[in-house]
Structures are given as C-alpha cells and as structure tokens.
Amino acid sequence: MIPAADSRKAANLNDYLPDVPQGADTTRRSSVFDRRNRRQLQQDVLSGKVDADTLLPDLVDYIDTEYYNLFANLDTGEHSASPVSRRGNPQYAFRQSIKKKRLNRILKRSTISFETPAGIYSHLFFMTLTIDHKVMSRDRANFFITSKGKGISRFFSRLEKSLEGGYSKVIVKESTVSGYPAVHIILHLDKPLKVKFHRKSNSYRPDPTDPYTRSILGRIKNLSDWNSPSPIWNVGFIDIYAFTADDLGIKGYATPINYISKYITKSLDLDHIEELKKCRRVSELPAKYRTAVWTILNSLIWNSHTWVISKAFKEDMQKLEDEADRKKGSWMWVDTVHRSDPRLYRWMGYDADNMDPNLFPKGPPAPV
Image (cartoon, rainbow, N blue to C red; front, side):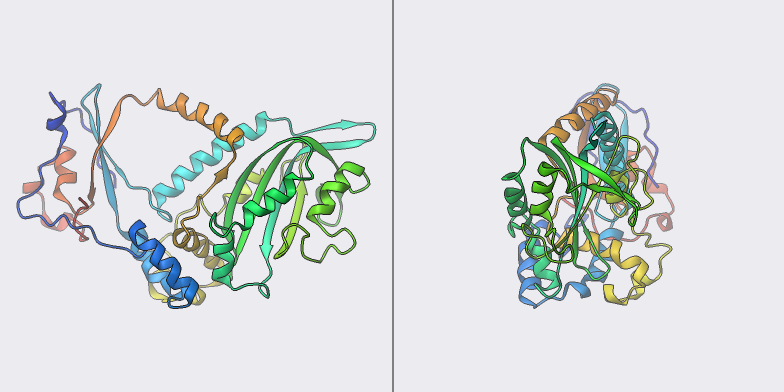
C-alpha cells in the first residue's frame, strides 16, 4: 500500500532528504536483469549457457522486489511516495494503460478511411510479423527483432522503397506461448490503400485489384502463395488487416491499440497465481499464463522498448503529456527506498521508531 501524502513543509532542499538509519546496509540486491548484467545475460542466452526458460524464478523475484520513489513538491512542501514501476508489476501496467489511452485518443483523431465510387480507401493497417521456428531458434529470433539484430529495421527499409509517401507506426513486441516473438505493427500511411471486406476472416484486408495497393501488398505477401514466407520479411510470415472509420475492431478488441497492449497493460498476479512461484520453468506454467510471462521476460532479457512509436505519434503524445504535467505542480524526486526501509515511513510522517516491527515487510536493503 502507498502511504498517503502529508502536508509537511521544508525550508530548503536538505530538509527534504530522509535520514539514513545508523548502521543501515544500503547495498542494493542484484538481479540478472539489472542494466550492468544485461549484456552478459544476453551473451549467455545466445550461447546456450543460460536457458531463458529457466529464468522464471529470477523474473518472479524481480517483480516481487518493491521499491518506492520519494517525492517532494517544491511549491507546497508536500511529501509523497510512489511504488517504482518495474516490468510486470502493477505500477508498470498502470503506466502502460495511460499510454494506451493516449494512443487511442490520437488514433481516433486521425484520418482513417474514406469511401469513393471505386471503393473504400484506408490509411490505417495492422500487421503481425512472426518467425518460422525452422529458420532460427527462439532466442536467436528474439535477438533478431532487436535494434542490434536489425530484423525490423531492415523490414521497414524494404517496405519504404515501394511506399509513396510517409507513415507513422506503433510497434509492440509480444511473445507467443512458445517464447517466439510476434511483432505487432500499427501503420498509418500518408497515401491510403484500397481495402475490401474479407468474409472468411470477418475483417477488412487490402484489395489487390487496385494497382497501387497490389504493388504494396505484393511486397508484403507472395500473392501467388499466401502461405509462403513474406518477400521482404524472409524469416517468416505476415498477417495484415485494414481498418475503416466505422470499424476499428480486431479479434474482439475495440481498437488495434487495445489488442497489441493486452499483455503489457496487465501485471503478473504473484499473489493469486500460485504456479508463478512454484514452477521453475516458463514451459511448466499452464499455457494460459505463458504468453504474458514470455512477453515480459523477453523484454527484460533483450531490453526491448515496450512501445516503439514513430515521431509523428510521439509529438502528439508529448502534447498530451505536457498538458497533464502542467496540472501536477513542481514535484521533485528525492530518493528511492525499499518497502522495508524505515525511511519510507518517516518520510510519510509516521513515527517509525515506535511502530510495531512486524508491520515492516521483510526484503532487501534500500538502494543507494
């Protein structure tokens, strides 16, 4: 639980800093996912020295270790404490939910489609890129879609050669139940493509009868063999949907933003999913939990951005964030402490010295 903010005021910055208890050990507990350990972890996973499937206990420990950021408001002197956002915990999921809402607001403001006597034309498309298991291993596939692996950047370089006009994009790297990546991409094209309703999939798809649309779709899919690997992705397959202003739904979700964020806006419920602490491997978990666990685990191993958002979308999002920040006041970060650190409770105005010791949860010492 987050302690409630109080209204204590301080005369200067030094008054904001909490005292370190005498003899306190401020050494931070290390994790295999810490930045200083990540490069070695990636090398060990790629070489086979470490099996990513066995990192479930490390993931659970990482999520379960709670730290709090201490803040002071320079205008009012108020103090507050907020749980540190870590991939997989409720605070991280909450932050992603806010970003999801902002992206949806931007998407709905954009021009999505229009209708002419010749048919419907759409600016908005959704693609999923997958990797054939026969082409590369699970860990090599997850490396392939990173900035160092260059798989996604090469894909867009090839796609841009055939596009007339620019585009905006949002990318989310989800994992499948097997741990292989599924790259979800939302594309907003400056020049629209002709689309038509596809009854079998109950969705809109690009219409290859239109010459320009066919030229783009032909680079993405082998039009003579739709079940073959993509000509510009090479390592696997591409599924592509289109949207209209009247129909933004996809696979039961109201918008494509909601669909691609379904796992990153949910935390791993360590208190209620007993298997997360009992199982030693991700593959031992019930199948219904594996996709979410692999998505978080692979993003930690490979340091993947949760969202990859192009400049145009970012600029619109920044306007929304600036608007929200103006309402917050001048809050300043002061320190980060573990939930077991008495400084957290002193900061919030509690008499920590006279509190029942059993109220303090057990955990690692506070970080420096």
